[in-house]
Image (cartoon, rainbow, N blue to C red; front, side, top):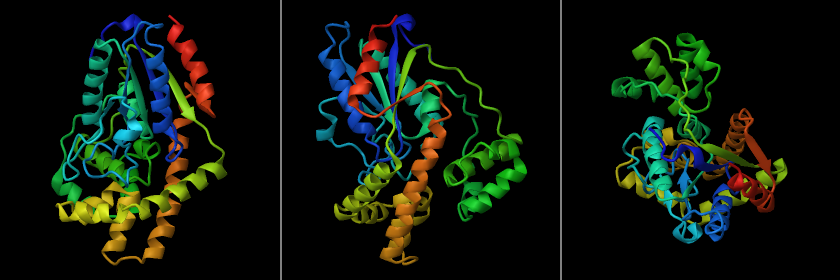
Length: 312
């Protein structure tokens, strides 16, 4: 998609692992820019979420979805755009996201992309070309019964090149990769068609012990504020336990608890461990992107943004 006003287009991307405070920082950054809008001759900012689970309606507490109050009056996009009983792919995200970016820029505003799903961010900003292969429901049903280890083994045999670059703990990515190999013989090397914009990547860097404590505190809070009840309601509204399993982390382990496969204590222990592992995988992904400026606080972010906005 062609972006309007190529020479003066600017996008800010805020990334980081789960529980690092990305959403809060994005709102703070947006508020700062809005206060400067007359000086830099823009009409404001809008935020685009880059989270593969926050696109689904009703998955609020479990995904850490930002609330209306927390948005601080800043328009947010790509939240609650699909039913969890439907399939929403990175290709869907890419197409919708590009359209939204174009609309924001048309309004003389600066888009701020914020999230922890690195693959979605790469698809949106770098224009990673996604293979156009339709979902194979029969194959997915068969594969969904397998463990991530079994799925990875299947992919490794079919396409070792893709297997060496994929998140081997993510069943959704593994199943999709196998689905593509079944249709095309292998997963094609991703080509890129990047947006013709200036991009500032900001990454939140926290000491491991602080991030770990944040993850623990946040999980306790979510369990106290109705996360288990949220997942019960999703199931009552038609979301199968099988589909819940595919959403991973909170939805996987709480559904296992609710179906009697594990105890409450096992659920909490295993879930906490998996969230911490997930945060490490996120950082591994982001550290491959050498364009990211790693910051410790809002002050560092604002300093970089000032230079970025006045540059030509």
